[in-house]
Amino acid sequence: MAQTDEFGEELADFVRRVAELKAARSVPADDLPTVLDAAIFELDHVAGQLWPWYESLSSTGPSGVASVDRQEQQLLKALFQRVPVPVALVDRETVVRRLNLAATSFTGVRAGYATGRPLTGFLAHADRAAFRSQAAAVARGEGDRSLTVHLQQQPAVPVRATLTALRPSGEPRTAVLVVLQPADSRVPSPERVPGPVPTLTETTRHAALMDLVDAMTTALLSGPVGDPAGVLERAAGVLHGRFADWVVADVAGAARLSRTTVLAPSDSVEGASGVAAQDPAACPLVVEAARGGSTALPVRPEDPDAFGRDTSGAPILVRANVTSLLCVPLTTAPGPVQGVLTLFRSGARRAFSMAEAQAMDMMSRHLSLAMSAPR
Image (cartoon, rainbow, N blue to C red):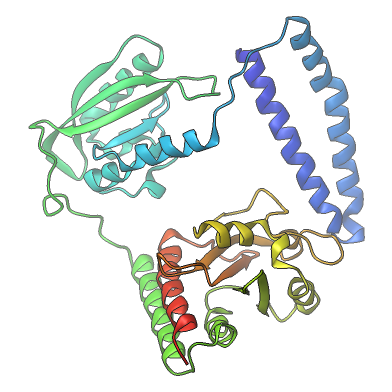
C-alpha cells in the first residue's frame, strides 16, 4: 500500500508538470526550446522510471485503494474547523498542518501564520522539548499522551495538551492530533485571551482597505442604481489599479452570464480584448461562483485553465501572469447571484490576503444591493 501511495503521488506530480508544460505553449518563441527540453525530460522520466514502477506494482496484484468521496472530505474539514474545542493537526516534528477556529482564538495565533511552523514555537521554552518528545512518540505508534504546557503569550495559565495518532486518508505517514484545553477545563473568554498586537504593516494595510471600502461606497451612492452593468463599471473603476491589476465583471442575465467590463494593465491591451471576447460560460471559476455563490481565493493557481482560454487557445491565467485571484459572486442571501466579479493580481504584486477577501465579500453585498435597487 505504501508503494502504491508513493507511486500515486509521483504520478500526480507528473500530471501537474504536464499541465504546466501545456500551458507554457503560449510563452514567447525564444523560450520554447527550454519548454521542449523540459518535455523531453518528462518523457524520459516516464519511460525510465514510472513505467517500470507501474509494471512492478502490476505484477504483485491489484491494490484496492478506497476512493474518498469529495463531499465527505469537505464535511470533515468543516467539522474540524467548527468544532468548539481548540484542535491542531501536526506532523511528528510538531509542524502545524491545520489549526481550527477555536485554536486560533485560544492561542491568539492566526491559522495562516501558524501553518508550516512548529507548534512548539508557541509554547514556553521549558515545555518545548517535552512536547516535541511526546509528539514523536505518538507518531511512532506508542499510544496517546497528555501533558501540561504553557502558551508563550500566557505563561501563567497551564494548558492541558492531549495528543493522539491520526492517519490521514491516502497519506503514508502518521500525523498527530493535538487538543488544547485549560488545565481547569474552562475555556477562557475572549477578554482573557489577548489577541496579537498588529504590526505597522498590518495597520497600514487595514487603513488602505478602509479607504477602498469608503471609495466603493462613495462610487455606489453617487451614481444611478438599478443598472447592473453601470454599477459594475463604476465598481471596476474603483478596484482597478489600487486593488487589482485586472478586473473582469460578468452580469447574470435571464439565460446566461454576459461579460460587461474588462479592465487590464496598460501593457495588456491585446490580452484584455481576448478576455472581453471570452464567453463567461467557458470560465470554470466564474461558472462555479455563479452556481454555488461562494468566493474563490486561489494563490498561484495550479490549474492553468481555471479561467478558461482566450481566442488564441492560450490559458488566460498564463497569458496574464496571474499570481493570485479573487472570484466573488454578487448576491445578497437568500437572493440569486446577480453577477460575478473576478480580480487578478500578476507579477511580483503581493497575493490577495484573507482580510482583503473579507473586505471584498462585504463590498460584493453592497454591489448586489445597488444592482437590484429600483431605478
